[in-house]
Length: 218
Length: 280
Length: 67
Image (cartoon, helix red, strand yellow):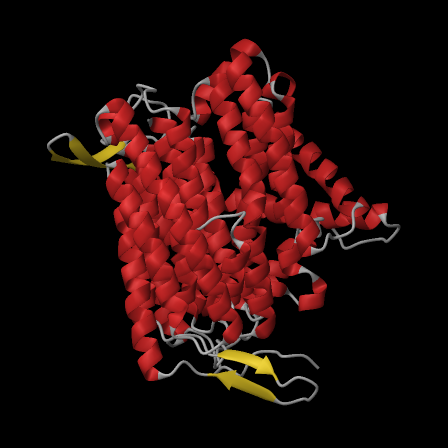
């Protein structure tokens, strides 16, 4: 696994039978980054968005109310935990599962926002994410069908996973978070409440970074 | 090599100054002196500073520290010959800090900058093409292996020219005043940095100076090879001046065009890499 | 926080940075540990140094929304 010239040194390995959860220098960096943003989401007050009343000099500030704040914070932390799972799991199925969970919690973060455009974007994104789940699990299933295992540790460097399965995984992750389906997500981030809304971006970029490591390794 | 961080910050700021100077001379203006950006950073660091009433307090400060931290890490990765994948991760994390900068303050202009930063996430995709291409050509993602490969087979700039173009566009999309720098366009004041002034802006200038230094050094190491330090600096300067020419001659694209252009470039490169992987 | 605490943080982080640089130069194992130390300390050092020597800190105003 770590003789491949891809991701640097091995730091920690946890075996569950043939499924080996591992931390390389690369995944640890991603893990620490996600952890830092979870801590920020726990301790920070949300930003209060300032806006100009159109056509006048007046300014108003959008407050996030207490009930909504609690829900957003919970969803942001759940999203962060799912990201931690996705960057540290050593198993294609668990990775897919955590990625799908990120998609769901991302919608959850903005679900309580009282803004038509944000909710519309969240709805559109939800449809894309749901379709992408098919590719994601399809990719993991194809890998299992052709290789007989889901463990990244076992598959590393063998080149047995077919190109189609890798492309399915990338497509799935793109649907869950990355460009070119990203424009709906740009609309979503118009929602007020910074550290929570930022978690949407953090999680989707981190799973993209992880999936690249996976497809280069297996 | 870790002691080189401070010189790298100053050289990066000097590069920013040279960048401004070259653009100004091309446009027929006298331009600021080349050490202007160093003075600029010092000036900001001495100024009175506050955190806006509407800001998300710890995050507003934390995101500046993260910016500096990730590029300090990237500096080490490049000069210790670490994993290119890790460098790629830093580019992506930089995208997150750009987004976070805009969102944390509660300013409408910051918000605009942040949303443009999310949209222009496509600018990171050519970098993935670079990494995949380099992996196909050299068979390794360790920067030390890549420089060794170039000692034997000659520079990748000649051997894999389209990949070098992709990396060049990635660097261009991170330069000030470039065609892709839609997040700091003047119609949205200072974009995502609008509310980060004083000490916070000085911190960001330090981070961005390191960023410019690391990007140029990575380009030289990946496509020309390991050089003695003075030739390395010279090569970085030449790359920088060529970037300044591009920035001076091109208008800033609209957000839609910027994203479309970068996606097209990635598509062309993806075809090139697939052809390279199948035939080569 | 007042200026004295920023100065204290600056000095403490400077000492830690110096120790880490020394640790890198004598080649402690594992090598990445000292580097992670530098990555975590350098931003704190920079920001606290700037916050120590800047003019002053005041309470914030609302963000700039145009003229």
